[in-house]
Image 1 (cartoon, rainbow, N blue to C red):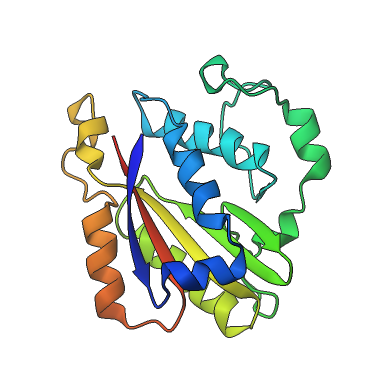
Image 2 (cartoon, rainbow, N blue to C red):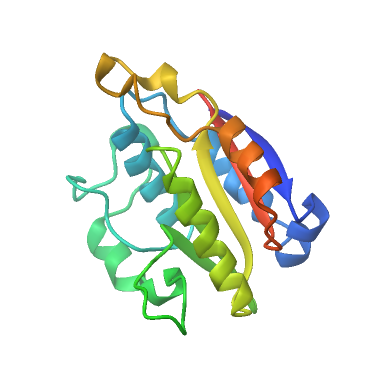
Length: 192
């Protein structure tokens, strides 16, 4: 699949200062995604692809298989991924009583990058942005990456969610430009 980018409070050059290969790494992960029939399968594929690239994770997607899906062409197992996971990197706050976690996190030298994947209701993006803001205010987060679909309605095969406002690239972009955060966020929209 392909993707769109929007840099909020950061630039492509800023991301390169964190790691010169970070944008290519995330882009490669998105391009490796096969077309799937449901949000849950896309989220599971992202889990396997991010962890394969050394990213730590908060939780394993519900009903994940113990082995990586064949279509991703990765030799990876949950046992190996669990052994190397540092879940504390995903923690949103080190000072508040909250137990929020980003979906994925990785250190690039002294720079912490966290990733949220949002394929649910648009309102859930606000929690993601708030989490990035908290971690950044604590001086822990160098960059938050929000991954959404450009057109989530294309993934709907039935009318179950037709009345729900789903997270999307345009809604996330518009929201970020209006809420006025000082946090560097890279918005990535998956084009299905």
